[in-house]
Length: 180
Image (tube, rainbow, N blue to C red; front, side, top):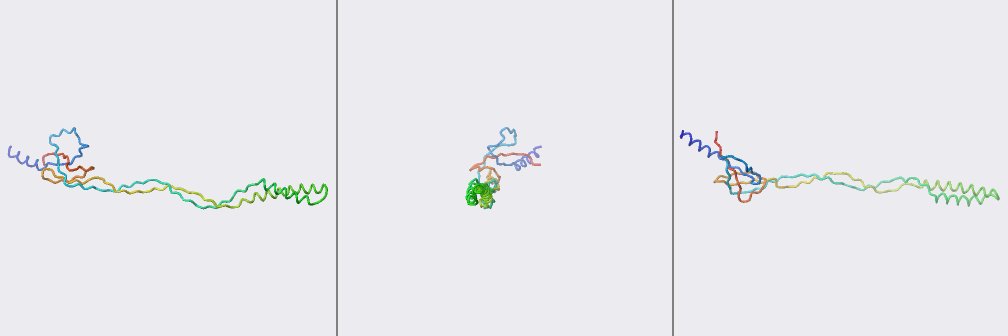
């Protein structure tokens, strides 16, 4: 029986695993008799970069010149001015009651003409309109995604990728199990 014990012991020592542990997230309740913790010297830490893309919506606006038709607007001033001019012209025609009738007819006709002229004077005008639309602004940033850490534990060199920079020393979990 002792002749099998020595090779099994050699095999179990040869299969010892060393794993870097993030001390902030370690499982304290682990009852594994084949696992213990130690400290390794950090030899090198290389940041691992990645590109983080973010899309931020923003509004893009521009001004555009447009030509509009003015709506017709009746003006009381045009109607009154036309009635006065028509009345004055009508009073120059005829004598007596005919002159009065001509004055009234001229005022009515002049008022109608003045109102019509003031309504058709809308025309066109130029104005500026602002148009806006939503666009996505893409921003790319180079940021550290992790760290490749090279460390030495009991003369052997190991490499692990961690999500933090461990500093000069790294706590490691050592697990021993038989090799099959």
